[in-house]
Image 1 (cartoon, rainbow over the protein chains, first blue to last red):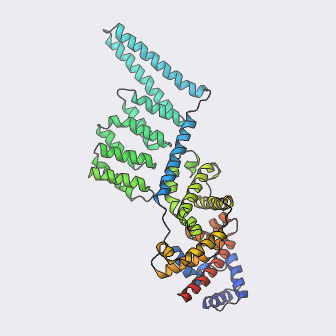
Image 2 (tube, rainbow over the protein chains, first blue to last red):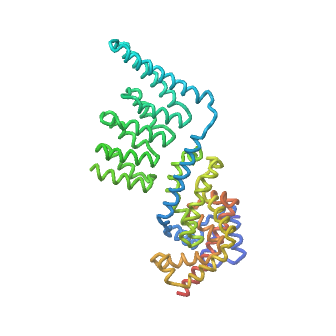
Image 3 (spheres, one colour):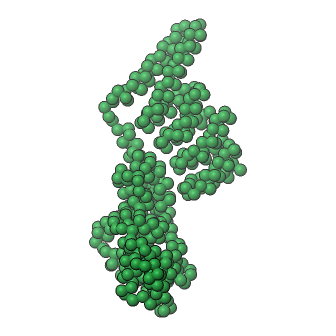
Length: 260
Length: 175
């Protein structure tokens, strides 16, 4: 249809003079894309008013229902993970490695009791155990299974003192792991080292890298617990982010109140 | 949503926070019942989780969500053997009670009247206008939800707006 005729038709419709045949024609032109709804003045105004109408808000009951449902699902997911399966070599190998570590540790213990004078040898053996354990941690952290990665993080807490390499691996897990539970476990494992300024700085930097509400809340609470005032700026950025859930915002606000 | 599909359930909380209000607005616009609308939102998210493996990750998540929301609504009415027409009659009774309406409606008279006109619109026309509002006028996505072309959606919106205008004018005259 000619552009001029379409304009005339729209004009007629907008003045309220279009007959049923012309209205049918407008429908056809809308369907083919030759006319846009925005060109139909009165209808467009009505449409705009509809868009402006405030959306109603659900009550807190919906949040309660949803989050308890989500917690149930998480529990089911965890139970599924820990259900019994015949171990294959992939799962058996780290276990064997762990058993070897325990065996070597036993030898170290035996040495310590039987030959207390040979401190150097004991020291060397202890070093070897730590190195073996670290190797196992790094290997488990690289695995696809979140359960294995959780085990790796758990192993770090059994060590008296972790090396810089292990803390770096824990921070890598805290910042990059796909699973929020593993990230939370990494944060727990890092907590004992928070007296070190380097660790505190890394924790502050980690805030912006978190998108799981659980980890965001855990970090905000820990920042308040260790009184890390340098974290306020990062926490405020989270508050300004429109994707941050309401519950997280309220926890962050509480933490900021404690910090400032 | 892709992360939820791959097992990261924490992300479902984020999706819920982002979309609960438009979804609730959609159900409330159709049913005018607070508790029922909240239950339907909850059921929609339950199905999103249950059928997360079916989300291909290519299209718009919101369109997929509204597609599920419509199914939830249909199933609710089928299960309860009540159809929306009956419900519509129920609320038209409610419309007579100014006390009920005044608490629900917004202050401005025009908005009140528009809300009233929406309530008097047949359910399928109300639904298309609610989808237009909460799907932010993305006609192509609405077409995917309804299983029709973008052009057909525009015609449906046109017809719904025309009828809404007629009802709106009738209400204006009676005030």
